[in-house]
Length: 143
Figure 1 (cartoon, rainbow, N blue to C red):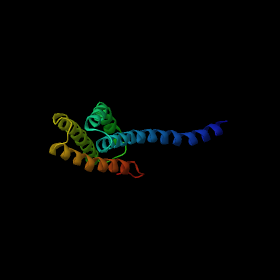
Figure 2: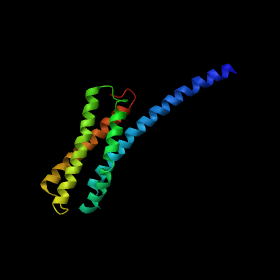
Figure 3: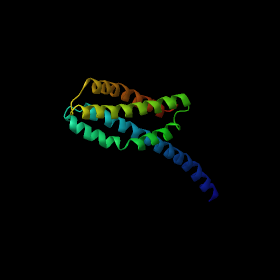
Figure 4: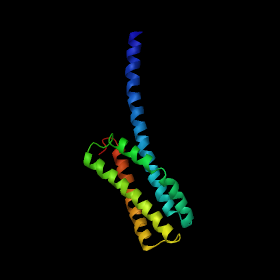
């Protein structure tokens, strides 16, 4: 009986540890999906600028939750404090750029301007970079 308990213990402890690690990874994948949603919204040719802003408004409401989740879970995968700080800063800049993009569009009667095109270019350049960094940090050995 004791032998069976010991065997069960050694079988299930690694599974529990893997499950905890998987849920942490799921949290970072949720942030990746959030960033992907932002990029898909700004690049969707089927949406009018007004519809695009409505979608971005709903994504903006989720910002603080994803920022907190990202900051908390990233530290568990990225051991380098400087890299962690850079990734958090990158997320903040992306979110700020999204807000500036929305403001520019709204202030220009739902039409793109030079300023909103600059924000759009920034988002399209930096969202994939951050997603790539997150994905690399989730690989075994991470960053």
